[in-house]
Structures are given as structure tokens and as C-alpha cells.
Image 1: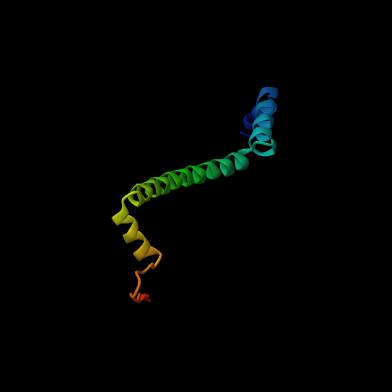
Image 2: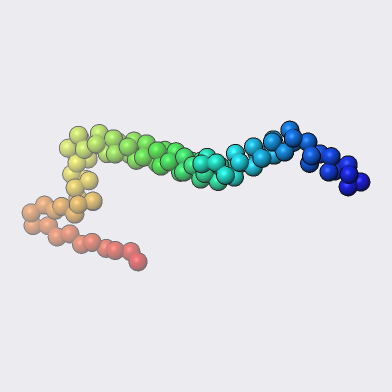
Length: 95
């Protein structure tokens, strides 16, 4: 039984193929671990790109809203706490 298995390990093609696979999978500059790490970074960057596209859409919508004078006043009062003369502004913070 042992001689049958040893026969495969003495074959020069199997030895060369196994050494090549060992080198390319683990010892090369672009081994499995580097490829996996780069793939995860790529996926994270795709998620960031999608997030930035959504943020850009929101900012463009706000910019369109600022062109309307009534909407500009609403944004100034709610977000920047601007006030008119003889008017008090109370800021209520929820905890």
C-alpha cells in the first residue's frame, strides 16, 4: 500500500506541479492572502463610492432648494439658528 502512494511522489511532474502551486499560492508577491486583502479593500472602496454618490445627490437637492427664497429662509432658521429682529430663538436639545 505504501509503495503505491510513494509512486506518485516520485513522479517529477507531480513534484514540479506541487512546488509550482506551493510557490504561487503562498510564497509569491501576489499570494492568496494579498489577493484576499486587496479584494476586501476593493469592496470597501465600492461601498464608499456608493455612499459618496448618495451624499452628492442629497447635496444637489439641498442646493436646488436654496435657490428658492422661502426654502432658504427655512434652512437658515432651522439649521443655522438665524433669527429676525426682535425675535428670540430657543434651542431644545433632546438627550
